[in-house]
Length: 500
Image (cartoon, rainbow, N blue to C red; front, side):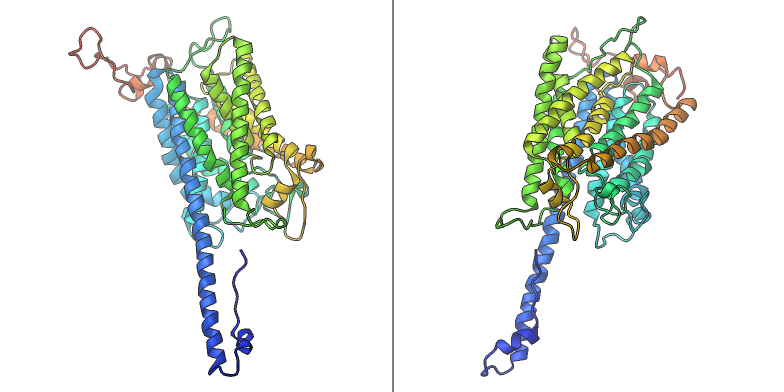
């Protein structure tokens, strides 16, 4: 919005000769204009901050969705454990992102690799960031940690959760977000002075930054730990260890769907921005926010239906859990390009995402990889597809609106939309460097935890269930059907036989 300006020297000559003090009158009027202009500026900041805070609350509500999805996807004997890890992901992530993570991610001015200001939120608020920015980015960081917790569920020591979650949210994830989201990042589309391939990476809400990081971290955790007891029989044949509550899976899925409207549209950070496009005063960033919500919806819906019929052909069943995972795979894929693609392209994104998820699950089963929530396949595989999809289908008009370059009318956009291959080259680099960085950090961490016997629980504890052996009791109260006077079945505590 253009600022209102007024000068007494310019205004005074317009007063007639009968004006007693033209300069004083002009100064008075200009002061009123200045006051009005300041109020408009304050209102703009208030609108944008309120929008960002509301989006942060939506993204944080996804933690409840993760908790319910995880709880429903594991067996009843491990429900308490997985829900507690989700709570600790948020709590530990909050402290470590406050102390280090936000500074590593957005602490500028800095180099292209890592930020170096705002530790402990010093120097905030500033002209660049307010507390609302921290809250929003923290919600993203703990989402990445939540993804990883699903991959290693039902067999991981509690101390390992605390260690990996703190390291991931305090260092690993922030460095990646600095590369692609900070104005100083070496591959950021906002770093207009040093654009990778003249383009930078357009990962709007984090198919790569959030989903690939969480998925690849979970991949290494599950690989180092190995499959759950009973997941594959002695002949190597897959044995389904189904979660105990499809109802919780569906509830968690809908909560995540709801929260994704803060995850993707909220990544604009601002809503009170006009676009100077012809004679369209009604058109601005608020319209782009709506379009982003639409593309997010269409990708998820398409992926859900594709998974429904795809799994029906392969297995002969209509499986609600598979459909929920397919839906989330579509959301993970569209997260990168949600703001810069047409709605019809989002349908293509969701369709392919479902096929990617089905293919990754078939490969995982073939190589005896066990991920109770399919998190590595869903977030890692579909996230990588989303990064490539954006480089293929990003529309020129939307790229230039969302990522304008001062002094330039256009920038590289999707290959299939006539924009050349520079954006695709940048996105291939993104996939490779995220894979390399997470492999070099989280892989060794899980290996060290394994060698120190801090990663996997004992076979006895795993068989009995962690709720009873590690958390003092089951998540559910069981009643004796034969004697209604008894409140519950007496249970004997199973002492851990392995390492603690």
